[in-house]
Length: 500
Image: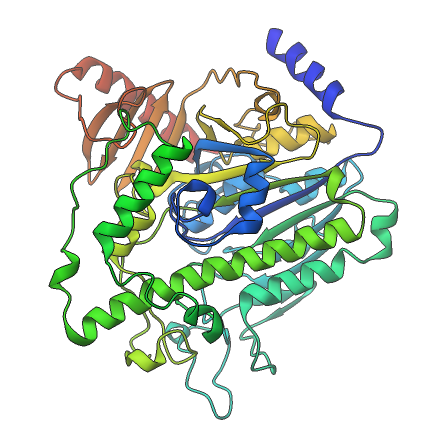
């Protein structure tokens, strides 16, 4: 009852007669330290401005994989409860943010990647434009165009939606098409619609970048020339020092682990040049994302809507360490970044991107599940420029928006699994009472307050997150009873979730 009154009090203080607009910006496969405001050397001034005048969360969690994360975000329930923990799935026994926010009078807009089998236009969004699938060639998600190399796309038709229409494949006529820019352009068009003169809006702007393939404008890549010539270890150490200096991490709780992979000096000849170019393109993709975020900010200001807009920014999982480029694509250095390539960053650069966290996408260790998370809302955050260090999760977004807008969440489906994050905006405790859970592929885990039990390939570990945020000191043998209790909690959750 105490929490209910606290939440209602915060709602009265934040809410005005004019309902706030809401923008959630989601990026794909971006590492924990890839933004300037989280320690990166990559230039992200527009996103940094949101952090400097907003609130940065240091322990926001996703699910370690694209489509389960997006399902959690959209529905407020675990992906295992909505059937979205498996590929080629639809969201079952669940509602979307679009469907819920409509009950509060919102105009609902979605542009970008969905990664499911449903067209979001049919799931409560007044508009949906973008990639229904998980990844595609950024320059051309469809068939080969005259005068160009094959876009690859792993031999699969990629589904693309434009409101009620679904294309398979979608081949843009414009050879200056780039998915990142296209998603933004469509969103900006919608913000000019007359309906927004009288309705608040929710914009879900869901980018594919910087997920592979590594594709960026040549002029943006050129700006990065030479920046990564000093190699993995040097760049990682500089990121780490900046993270400590700005307060993102505590060096006593998150010491920088010994470099886990091959040393930079082991790269020779053309392979060395390819390693430089991979990170140059990746950095260019993030700077392009930042340019596009800047366009959205400028548009909101031009429409006099910026001051009454809540903006959130996150990534759907940590950096990815694999090499799964399409075999049909060129591997020539001169093709990197173009339609003829399908490159990934690889394990070493992914380790840098996740500094200082352990492991990568797919793992339920921190490097797979922890994301930068920024909340910006002019005049509504009590201590702009500060950090929130409590654990939070994508399942909390639905509860937050329902709390904020007083939208109606149905009573005949799986209940919301998260809690409202509104107290954090006023330096109040989130008062989470339930553990957080993860499961994907061969990994999974549970976090209960400061204890975290996590496994990969059925090898369980136990960590005290109050002292060890990069999971370097396994306490499983020291506290076997604690580990068994957490494993029992995890298995009970998973069994119940799969019965939904």
